[in-house]
Amino acid sequence: MAFRFRGAAARALGAARGPGATGRRCVPCSQVAFGPSCLQRWPRNVRNMGGMLKTLDPRVFIVVEVKRDEPGVLGTVLKIFSDSGLNITHIESRFKTFARDGPAFHIDIQGSAEDASVQQVLKEVKGLPGVHEIGVMPDREVPWFPMNIRDLDLTTDTLDGGAALINQDHPGFSDLEYRKRREDIVAAAKRFRHGDRLPRVQYLESEVQTWKAVYVRLQGCHRQWACTEYLEMLKQMELYCGFAPDNIPQLEDISDFLQQRTGFMLRPISGLLSARDFLNALAFRVFYSTQYIRHHENPFYTPEPDICHELLGHVPLFANPAFADFSQEIGLASLAASDDDVARLASLYWFTVEFGLLKEGDKVKAFGAGLLSSFGEMEWSSSHTPSQECRDSGSMSHQERPVLKPLDPAVAAKEPYPITTYQPVFFVAESLTDAKRKISTFCDTLTRPFFPQYDPLTQNIVVTKAIRRADRVSTVQMQQEKQKEFFEKQQEQ
Image (cartoon, rainbow, N blue to C red):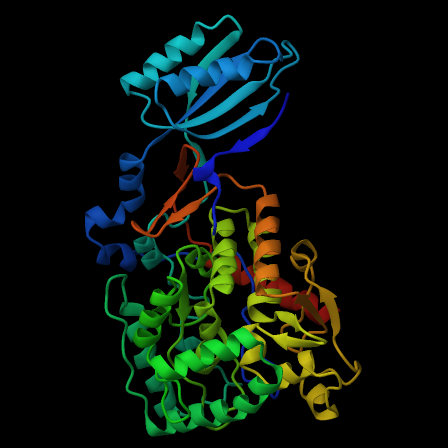
Protein backbone atom coordinates (compact mmCIF):
# COMPACT_ATOMS: atom_id res chain seq x y z
CA MET A 1 0.00 0.00 0.00
CA ALA A 2 1.55 3.28 -1.11
CA PHE A 3 -0.36 6.51 -1.65
CA ARG A 4 -0.30 10.27 -1.26
CA PHE A 5 -3.13 12.27 0.27
CA ARG A 6 -3.63 16.01 0.51
CA GLY A 7 -6.29 17.45 2.77
CA ALA A 8 -8.46 20.49 2.06
CA ALA A 9 -5.88 22.78 3.60
CA ALA A 10 -3.31 21.34 1.20
CA ARG A 11 -5.20 21.96 -2.01
CA ALA A 12 -3.96 25.31 -3.11
CA LEU A 13 -5.94 27.44 -5.53
CA GLY A 14 -4.54 29.31 -6.54
CA ALA A 15 14.94 41.06 -22.29
CA ALA A 16 15.08 42.68 -25.29
CA ARG A 17 12.44 43.34 -27.89
CA GLY A 18 12.59 43.11 -31.69
CA PRO A 19 12.13 46.10 -33.99
CA GLY A 20 8.59 47.39 -34.35
CA ALA A 21 7.48 46.04 -30.99
CA THR A 22 5.83 47.97 -28.23
CA GLY A 23 6.22 45.42 -25.48
CA ARG A 24 9.18 43.81 -23.81
CA ARG A 25 10.49 40.39 -22.99
CA CYS A 26 11.03 39.12 -19.48
CA VAL A 27 14.07 36.85 -19.35
CA PRO A 28 13.28 33.77 -17.25
CA CYS A 29 15.80 32.96 -14.58
CA SER A 30 16.08 31.63 -11.03
CA GLN A 31 16.79 33.68 -7.95
CA VAL A 32 18.01 37.07 -6.85
CA ALA A 33 19.02 38.32 -3.44
CA PHE A 34 18.23 41.27 -1.21
CA GLY A 35 20.48 43.88 0.22
CA PRO A 36 20.97 44.39 3.95
CA SER A 37 19.41 47.84 3.64
CA CYS A 38 16.04 46.15 3.18
CA LEU A 39 16.31 44.44 6.55
CA GLN A 40 17.56 47.60 8.22
CA ARG A 41 14.36 49.38 7.18
CA TRP A 42 12.14 46.81 8.84
CA PRO A 43 11.24 46.84 12.55
CA ARG A 44 12.69 43.82 14.30
CA ASN A 45 9.29 42.18 14.88
CA VAL A 46 8.41 42.48 11.19
CA ARG A 47 11.68 41.06 9.90
CA ASN A 48 10.94 37.66 11.47
CA MET A 49 7.42 37.41 10.06
CA GLY A 50 8.01 33.80 8.98
CA GLY A 51 9.06 32.84 12.52
CA MET A 52 5.98 34.53 13.94
CA LEU A 53 3.70 32.63 11.56
CA LYS A 54 5.31 29.36 12.59
CA THR A 55 4.64 30.20 16.24
CA LEU A 56 0.99 31.10 15.59
CA ASP A 57 0.23 28.12 13.33
CA PRO A 58 2.81 25.38 14.03
CA ARG A 59 3.06 21.96 12.39
CA VAL A 60 4.46 18.68 13.71
CA PHE A 61 6.04 16.08 11.42
CA ILE A 62 5.43 12.53 12.70
CA VAL A 63 6.57 9.24 11.14
CA VAL A 64 4.67 6.07 12.03
CA GLU A 65 6.29 2.78 10.92
CA VAL A 66 4.00 -0.25 10.88
CA LYS A 67 5.01 -3.90 10.86
CA ARG A 68 2.83 -5.21 8.05
CA ASP A 69 0.97 -3.88 5.03
CA GLU A 70 -2.55 -5.02 5.80
CA PRO A 71 -6.10 -3.62 5.55
CA GLY A 72 -7.19 -1.38 8.40
CA VAL A 73 -3.76 -0.53 9.75
CA LEU A 74 -3.93 3.10 8.64
CA GLY A 75 -7.53 3.47 9.84
CA THR A 76 -6.52 2.35 13.32
CA VAL A 77 -3.74 4.94 13.45
CA LEU A 78 -5.91 7.76 12.09
CA LYS A 79 -8.74 7.01 14.54
CA ILE A 80 -6.44 7.93 17.43
CA PHE A 81 -5.62 11.26 15.79
CA SER A 82 -9.31 11.88 15.10
CA ASP A 83 -10.44 11.01 18.61
CA SER A 84 -7.84 13.43 19.98
CA GLY A 85 -9.15 16.29 17.84
CA LEU A 86 -5.83 16.78 16.03
CA ASN A 87 -6.07 18.13 12.48
CA ILE A 88 -3.99 16.24 9.92
CA THR A 89 -2.80 18.59 7.19
CA HIS A 90 -0.78 16.12 5.12
CA ILE A 91 -0.24 12.37 5.00
CA GLU A 92 1.62 10.06 2.67
CA SER A 93 2.98 6.52 2.81
CA ARG A 94 6.42 5.23 1.95
CA PHE A 95 8.03 1.81 1.99
CA LYS A 96 11.18 2.28 4.03
CA THR A 97 12.98 -1.04 4.46
CA PHE A 98 13.08 -4.66 3.30
CA ALA A 99 13.14 -5.79 6.94
CA ARG A 100 9.35 -5.27 7.15
CA ASP A 101 6.65 -5.20 4.50
CA GLY A 102 4.75 -2.43 6.28
CA PRO A 103 4.90 1.18 5.11
CA ALA A 104 5.94 4.28 7.01
CA PHE A 105 3.24 6.93 7.28
CA HIS A 106 4.49 10.52 7.11
CA ILE A 107 1.90 12.59 8.96
CA ASP A 108 1.83 16.36 9.46
CA ILE A 109 -0.56 17.84 12.01
CA GLN A 110 -1.47 21.24 13.35
CA GLY A 111 0.00 21.83 16.77
CA SER A 112 3.25 21.74 18.70
CA ALA A 113 5.23 18.65 19.71
CA GLU A 114 5.06 19.84 23.33
CA ASP A 115 1.25 19.94 23.40
CA ALA A 116 -0.26 17.45 25.83
CA SER A 117 -2.69 16.20 23.17
CA VAL A 118 0.17 15.48 20.76
CA GLN A 119 2.17 13.66 23.42
CA GLN A 120 -0.88 11.55 24.30
CA VAL A 121 -1.39 10.58 20.64
CA LEU A 122 2.25 9.57 20.32
CA LYS A 123 1.87 7.35 23.37
CA GLU A 124 -1.36 5.72 22.18
CA VAL A 125 -0.14 5.08 18.63
CA LYS A 126 3.09 3.57 19.92
CA GLY A 127 1.03 1.10 21.95
CA LEU A 128 -0.85 -0.26 18.94
CA PRO A 129 0.03 -3.90 18.16
CA GLY A 130 0.80 -3.26 14.50
CA VAL A 131 3.06 -0.26 15.05
CA HIS A 132 6.81 -0.82 14.95
CA GLU A 133 7.94 2.72 15.81
CA ILE A 134 6.70 6.31 15.99
CA GLY A 135 8.70 9.52 16.27
CA VAL A 136 8.64 13.27 15.83
CA MET A 137 10.95 14.32 13.01
CA PRO A 138 12.77 17.64 12.46
CA ASP A 139 11.11 20.22 10.25
CA ARG A 140 12.07 19.83 6.60
CA GLU A 141 14.30 22.61 5.23
CA VAL A 142 13.02 24.27 2.06
CA PRO A 143 14.37 27.13 -0.06
CA TRP A 144 13.43 30.56 1.23
CA PHE A 145 10.07 31.87 0.03
CA PRO A 146 7.77 34.71 1.16
CA MET A 147 5.29 33.52 3.79
CA ASN A 148 3.59 36.85 4.42
CA ILE A 149 2.91 39.64 1.96
CA ARG A 150 5.37 41.84 3.88
CA ASP A 151 8.12 39.42 2.88
CA LEU A 152 7.82 40.82 -0.65
CA ASP A 153 9.72 43.84 0.66
CA LEU A 154 12.77 41.53 0.60
CA THR A 155 12.33 40.54 -3.04
CA THR A 156 12.64 43.85 -4.87
CA ASP A 157 16.28 43.73 -5.98
CA THR A 158 16.38 43.76 -9.77
CA LEU A 159 18.75 42.16 -12.21
CA ASP A 160 19.42 45.53 -13.79
CA GLY A 161 19.24 48.01 -10.93
CA GLY A 162 16.52 50.07 -12.62
CA ALA A 163 18.15 52.89 -14.53
CA ALA A 164 21.13 50.63 -15.28
CA LEU A 165 19.06 49.26 -18.16
CA ILE A 166 19.92 52.37 -20.13
CA ASN A 167 22.99 51.32 -22.10
CA GLN A 168 24.50 52.69 -25.30
CA ASP A 169 21.85 50.97 -27.42
CA HIS A 170 19.02 52.55 -25.46
CA PRO A 171 17.20 55.43 -27.22
CA GLY A 172 17.59 57.57 -24.09
CA PHE A 173 21.25 56.85 -23.42
CA SER A 174 22.48 60.30 -24.44
CA ASP A 175 19.46 62.15 -23.00
CA LEU A 176 20.63 63.23 -19.54
CA GLU A 177 17.24 64.75 -18.69
CA TYR A 178 15.47 61.48 -19.50
CA ARG A 179 17.96 59.48 -17.47
CA LYS A 180 17.51 61.76 -14.45
CA ARG A 181 13.75 61.42 -14.78
CA ARG A 182 14.06 57.65 -14.83
CA GLU A 183 16.30 57.69 -11.77
CA ASP A 184 13.76 59.73 -9.80
CA ILE A 185 10.89 57.36 -10.63
CA VAL A 186 13.04 54.32 -9.87
CA ALA A 187 14.07 55.81 -6.51
CA ALA A 188 10.42 56.13 -5.47
CA ALA A 189 9.82 52.48 -6.36
CA LYS A 190 12.84 51.38 -4.32
CA ARG A 191 11.56 53.27 -1.26
CA PHE A 192 8.16 51.62 -1.40
CA ARG A 193 7.24 49.13 1.34
CA HIS A 194 4.07 47.13 1.84
CA GLY A 195 1.48 49.34 3.50
CA ASP A 196 2.78 52.54 1.89
CA ARG A 197 0.58 54.50 -0.44
CA LEU A 198 1.48 53.72 -4.04
CA PRO A 199 3.59 56.55 -5.46
CA ARG A 200 1.77 58.85 -7.87
CA VAL A 201 3.82 60.16 -10.79
CA GLN A 202 3.15 63.56 -12.31
CA TYR A 203 3.86 62.67 -15.91
CA LEU A 204 5.37 65.28 -18.21
CA GLU A 205 3.63 66.44 -21.37
CA SER A 206 6.28 64.69 -23.50
CA GLU A 207 5.59 61.45 -21.60
CA VAL A 208 1.84 61.78 -22.10
CA GLN A 209 2.41 62.28 -25.84
CA THR A 210 4.50 59.10 -25.95
CA TRP A 211 1.73 57.24 -24.13
CA LYS A 212 -0.85 58.66 -26.55
CA ALA A 213 1.08 57.55 -29.61
CA VAL A 214 1.22 53.98 -28.28
CA TYR A 215 -2.38 54.00 -27.02
CA VAL A 216 -3.85 55.20 -30.31
CA ARG A 217 -1.71 52.84 -32.41
CA LEU A 218 -2.79 49.85 -30.33
CA GLN A 219 -6.51 50.67 -30.30
CA GLY A 220 -7.07 49.48 -33.86
CA CYS A 221 -4.99 46.35 -33.26
CA HIS A 222 -6.94 45.52 -30.11
CA ARG A 223 -10.27 45.76 -31.92
CA GLN A 224 -8.99 43.31 -34.52
CA TRP A 225 -6.84 40.86 -32.56
CA ALA A 226 -7.40 41.18 -28.78
CA CYS A 227 -9.59 38.65 -26.98
CA THR A 228 -13.08 39.64 -25.86
CA GLU A 229 -12.17 39.49 -22.16
CA TYR A 230 -9.38 41.99 -22.66
CA LEU A 231 -11.61 44.41 -24.56
CA GLU A 232 -14.29 44.20 -21.87
CA MET A 233 -11.83 44.91 -19.07
CA LEU A 234 -10.13 47.72 -21.00
CA LYS A 235 -13.50 49.46 -21.22
CA GLN A 236 -13.81 49.15 -17.45
CA MET A 237 -10.34 50.61 -17.03
CA GLU A 238 -11.34 53.56 -19.20
CA LEU A 239 -14.45 54.11 -17.09
CA TYR A 240 -12.94 53.75 -13.62
CA CYS A 241 -9.13 53.95 -13.79
CA GLY A 242 -8.37 56.91 -16.04
CA PHE A 243 -7.24 54.95 -19.12
CA ALA A 244 -7.32 57.43 -22.00
CA PRO A 245 -5.06 58.58 -24.83
CA ASP A 246 -4.38 61.89 -23.07
CA ASN A 247 -3.86 60.48 -19.56
CA ILE A 248 -1.38 57.99 -18.10
CA PRO A 249 -3.25 56.16 -15.32
CA GLN A 250 -1.86 55.92 -11.79
CA LEU A 251 -1.00 52.55 -10.23
CA GLU A 252 -2.91 53.46 -7.08
CA ASP A 253 -6.22 53.92 -8.93
CA ILE A 254 -5.75 50.72 -10.93
CA SER A 255 -4.75 48.69 -7.88
CA ASP A 256 -7.87 49.82 -5.99
CA PHE A 257 -10.03 48.75 -8.93
CA LEU A 258 -8.34 45.35 -9.28
CA GLN A 259 -8.68 44.61 -5.57
CA GLN A 260 -12.43 45.09 -5.84
CA ARG A 261 -12.63 42.89 -8.95
CA THR A 262 -10.30 39.94 -8.28
CA GLY A 263 -8.19 40.76 -5.22
CA PHE A 264 -5.09 41.56 -7.29
CA MET A 265 -2.99 44.58 -6.43
CA LEU A 266 -0.09 46.40 -8.03
CA ARG A 267 3.31 47.17 -6.56
CA PRO A 268 5.95 49.49 -8.07
CA ILE A 269 9.29 48.02 -9.13
CA SER A 270 12.48 49.57 -10.46
CA GLY A 271 13.24 47.08 -13.24
CA LEU A 272 13.54 43.39 -14.14
CA LEU A 273 13.05 40.88 -11.33
CA SER A 274 14.18 37.29 -11.35
CA ALA A 275 11.55 34.76 -12.39
CA ARG A 276 11.42 33.33 -8.87
CA ASP A 277 10.75 36.66 -7.16
CA PHE A 278 8.30 37.76 -9.83
CA LEU A 279 6.32 34.50 -9.74
CA ASN A 280 6.38 34.33 -5.93
CA ALA A 281 4.55 37.67 -5.79
CA LEU A 282 1.74 36.30 -7.95
CA ALA A 283 0.99 33.81 -5.15
CA PHE A 284 -0.16 36.84 -3.11
CA ARG A 285 -2.07 38.28 -6.09
CA VAL A 286 0.55 40.98 -6.41
CA PHE A 287 1.82 42.18 -9.78
CA TYR A 288 5.03 44.20 -10.00
CA SER A 289 4.77 47.15 -12.37
CA THR A 290 7.24 49.74 -13.57
CA GLN A 291 6.14 53.40 -13.69
CA TYR A 292 8.64 54.98 -16.09
CA ILE A 293 7.94 55.28 -19.79
CA ARG A 294 9.99 54.60 -22.91
CA HIS A 295 11.96 57.37 -24.61
CA HIS A 296 9.92 59.76 -26.74
CA GLU A 297 12.35 59.45 -29.67
CA ASN A 298 10.75 56.13 -30.66
CA PRO A 299 7.43 55.52 -28.90
CA PHE A 300 6.95 52.18 -30.67
CA TYR A 301 10.09 50.56 -29.31
CA THR A 302 11.33 49.77 -25.82
CA PRO A 303 14.16 47.43 -24.79
CA GLU A 304 12.71 46.94 -21.28
CA PRO A 305 9.36 46.83 -19.46
CA ASP A 306 7.70 50.23 -19.11
CA ILE A 307 4.34 51.66 -18.11
CA CYS A 308 2.92 51.15 -21.62
CA HIS A 309 3.67 47.43 -21.55
CA GLU A 310 2.43 46.97 -17.98
CA LEU A 311 -0.83 48.89 -18.26
CA LEU A 312 -1.82 48.18 -21.86
CA GLY A 313 -0.51 44.61 -21.85
CA HIS A 314 -0.83 43.04 -18.40
CA VAL A 315 -3.20 45.01 -16.23
CA PRO A 316 -6.65 44.72 -17.87
CA LEU A 317 -6.84 40.93 -17.70
CA PHE A 318 -5.95 40.86 -13.99
CA ALA A 319 -9.54 42.07 -13.60
CA ASN A 320 -10.74 38.80 -15.18
CA PRO A 321 -11.35 36.09 -12.53
CA ALA A 322 -10.12 33.13 -14.61
CA PHE A 323 -6.94 34.93 -15.68
CA ALA A 324 -6.30 36.12 -12.12
CA ASP A 325 -6.78 32.59 -10.79
CA PHE A 326 -4.35 30.83 -13.10
CA SER A 327 -1.78 33.62 -12.65
CA GLN A 328 -1.93 33.00 -8.90
CA GLU A 329 -1.81 29.24 -9.51
CA ILE A 330 1.56 29.62 -11.23
CA GLY A 331 2.74 31.83 -8.37
CA LEU A 332 1.74 29.35 -5.68
CA ALA A 333 3.50 26.54 -7.54
CA SER A 334 6.71 28.58 -7.57
CA LEU A 335 6.95 28.87 -3.77
CA ALA A 336 10.07 26.99 -2.58
CA ALA A 337 10.19 25.20 -5.95
CA SER A 338 13.43 23.87 -7.36
CA ASP A 339 15.35 25.98 -9.87
CA ASP A 340 14.33 23.54 -12.61
CA ASP A 341 10.65 23.83 -11.74
CA VAL A 342 10.89 27.62 -11.56
CA ALA A 343 12.35 27.55 -15.07
CA ARG A 344 9.45 25.37 -16.25
CA LEU A 345 6.91 27.66 -14.63
CA ALA A 346 8.63 30.71 -16.14
CA SER A 347 8.35 29.12 -19.60
CA LEU A 348 4.69 28.34 -19.00
CA TYR A 349 4.16 31.94 -17.89
CA TRP A 350 5.92 33.10 -21.06
CA PHE A 351 3.63 31.14 -23.37
CA THR A 352 0.44 32.11 -21.53
CA VAL A 353 0.52 35.35 -19.54
CA GLU A 354 3.06 36.95 -21.89
CA PHE A 355 2.37 35.37 -25.29
CA GLY A 356 -0.85 33.41 -24.93
CA LEU A 357 -3.52 32.99 -27.60
CA LEU A 358 -7.06 31.65 -27.37
CA LYS A 359 -9.78 30.61 -29.81
CA GLU A 360 -12.79 32.74 -30.67
CA GLY A 361 -14.78 30.98 -33.35
CA ASP A 362 -12.49 30.28 -36.30
CA LYS A 363 -10.01 32.97 -35.22
CA VAL A 364 -7.24 33.18 -32.65
CA LYS A 365 -7.08 36.18 -30.35
CA ALA A 366 -4.33 37.51 -28.10
CA PHE A 367 -4.48 37.43 -24.32
CA GLY A 368 -0.73 37.59 -23.59
CA ALA A 369 0.66 40.96 -22.49
CA GLY A 370 3.65 40.76 -24.82
CA LEU A 371 1.20 40.56 -27.71
CA LEU A 372 -1.37 43.06 -26.47
CA SER A 373 1.27 45.76 -26.01
CA SER A 374 2.89 45.15 -29.41
CA PHE A 375 1.11 45.96 -32.67
CA GLY A 376 3.75 43.96 -34.56
CA GLU A 377 3.42 40.76 -32.54
CA MET A 378 -0.37 41.00 -32.42
CA GLU A 379 -0.45 40.92 -36.19
CA TRP A 380 2.21 38.20 -36.40
CA SER A 381 0.45 35.91 -33.92
CA SER A 382 -3.20 36.46 -34.82
CA SER A 383 -3.43 37.42 -38.50
CA HIS A 384 -4.07 34.71 -41.08
CA THR A 385 -1.63 36.48 -43.41
CA PRO A 386 0.97 38.59 -41.58
CA SER A 387 2.34 41.31 -43.84
CA GLN A 388 5.89 41.23 -45.17
CA GLU A 389 6.62 44.39 -43.16
CA CYS A 390 5.44 42.65 -40.01
CA ARG A 391 7.56 39.57 -40.70
CA ASP A 392 10.62 41.66 -41.52
CA SER A 393 10.28 43.74 -38.36
CA GLY A 394 10.27 40.63 -36.21
CA SER A 395 13.12 38.88 -38.08
CA MET A 396 10.64 36.33 -39.44
CA SER A 397 11.14 36.84 -43.19
CA HIS A 398 11.89 33.13 -43.55
CA GLN A 399 8.57 32.07 -41.99
CA GLU A 400 5.15 32.95 -43.41
CA ARG A 401 3.20 32.32 -40.21
CA PRO A 402 3.93 31.16 -36.68
CA VAL A 403 3.30 27.57 -35.64
CA LEU A 404 0.17 27.35 -33.49
CA LYS A 405 -0.07 24.47 -31.02
CA PRO A 406 -2.93 23.53 -28.67
CA LEU A 407 -2.11 24.62 -25.13
CA ASP A 408 -0.41 21.78 -23.29
CA PRO A 409 1.34 23.20 -20.22
CA ALA A 410 3.72 20.24 -19.97
CA VAL A 411 4.91 20.92 -23.52
CA ALA A 412 4.93 24.71 -23.16
CA ALA A 413 7.03 24.41 -20.00
CA LYS A 414 9.84 22.83 -22.04
CA GLU A 415 9.45 24.77 -25.29
CA PRO A 416 12.52 26.89 -26.16
CA TYR A 417 11.91 30.45 -27.27
CA PRO A 418 13.90 33.37 -28.70
CA ILE A 419 14.04 36.72 -26.91
CA THR A 420 15.26 38.97 -29.73
CA THR A 421 12.75 38.05 -32.46
CA TYR A 422 9.06 37.36 -32.76
CA GLN A 423 7.95 33.99 -31.44
CA PRO A 424 8.03 31.18 -34.03
CA VAL A 425 5.64 29.09 -31.86
CA PHE A 426 2.51 30.00 -29.90
CA PHE A 427 0.18 27.92 -27.73
CA VAL A 428 -3.57 28.34 -28.17
CA ALA A 429 -6.09 27.76 -25.36
CA GLU A 430 -9.75 27.03 -25.97
CA SER A 431 -10.61 29.84 -23.54
CA LEU A 432 -9.25 31.51 -20.40
CA THR A 433 -11.20 28.97 -18.35
CA ASP A 434 -9.55 26.18 -20.35
CA ALA A 435 -6.13 27.70 -19.67
CA LYS A 436 -6.95 27.93 -15.96
CA ARG A 437 -7.98 24.26 -15.79
CA LYS A 438 -4.94 22.98 -17.69
CA ILE A 439 -2.47 25.11 -15.73
CA SER A 440 -3.98 23.97 -12.43
CA THR A 441 -3.66 20.34 -13.49
CA PHE A 442 -0.06 20.87 -14.58
CA CYS A 443 0.90 22.55 -11.30
CA ASP A 444 -0.48 19.54 -9.42
CA THR A 445 2.00 17.31 -11.26
CA LEU A 446 5.04 19.19 -9.98
CA THR A 447 7.05 17.68 -7.14
CA ARG A 448 6.49 20.24 -4.40
CA PRO A 449 8.08 20.39 -0.96
CA PHE A 450 4.63 21.32 0.41
CA PHE A 451 1.24 22.41 -0.85
CA PRO A 452 0.57 26.10 -0.24
CA GLN A 453 -2.67 27.98 0.13
CA TYR A 454 -3.05 31.76 0.25
CA ASP A 455 -5.18 33.19 3.05
CA PRO A 456 -6.46 36.56 1.76
CA LEU A 457 -7.66 37.63 5.22
CA THR A 458 -4.23 37.44 6.87
CA GLN A 459 -2.23 37.68 3.60
CA ASN A 460 -0.22 34.65 4.72
CA ILE A 461 0.82 31.48 2.93
CA VAL A 462 -0.56 28.43 4.73
CA VAL A 463 1.49 25.27 4.27
CA THR A 464 0.58 21.64 4.82
CA LYS A 465 3.88 20.36 6.17
CA ALA A 466 6.24 21.09 9.05
CA ILE A 467 8.97 23.12 7.33
CA ARG A 468 11.64 25.67 8.04
CA ARG A 469 12.85 28.18 5.49
CA ALA A 470 16.53 28.23 4.65
CA ASP A 471 18.28 31.57 4.90
CA ARG A 472 17.75 33.83 1.94
CA VAL A 473 21.05 33.99 0.10
CA SER A 474 22.36 36.20 -2.67
CA THR A 475 22.28 34.56 -6.07
CA VAL A 476 22.57 37.69 -8.21
CA GLN A 477 25.97 36.69 -9.55
CA MET A 478 24.76 33.16 -10.27
CA GLN A 479 21.74 34.61 -12.04
CA GLN A 480 23.89 36.82 -14.23
CA GLU A 481 26.11 33.87 -15.10
CA LYS A 482 23.06 31.83 -16.11
CA GLN A 483 21.85 34.63 -18.34
CA LYS A 484 25.30 35.00 -19.91
CA GLU A 485 25.41 31.27 -20.60
CA PHE A 486 21.92 31.39 -22.11
CA PHE A 487 22.79 34.20 -24.51
CA GLU A 488 26.07 32.53 -25.51
CA LYS A 489 24.20 29.34 -26.41
CA GLN A 490 21.68 31.33 -28.43
CA GLN A 491 24.51 32.93 -30.43
CA GLU A 492 26.06 29.55 -31.14
CA GLN A 493 22.83 28.18 -32.64
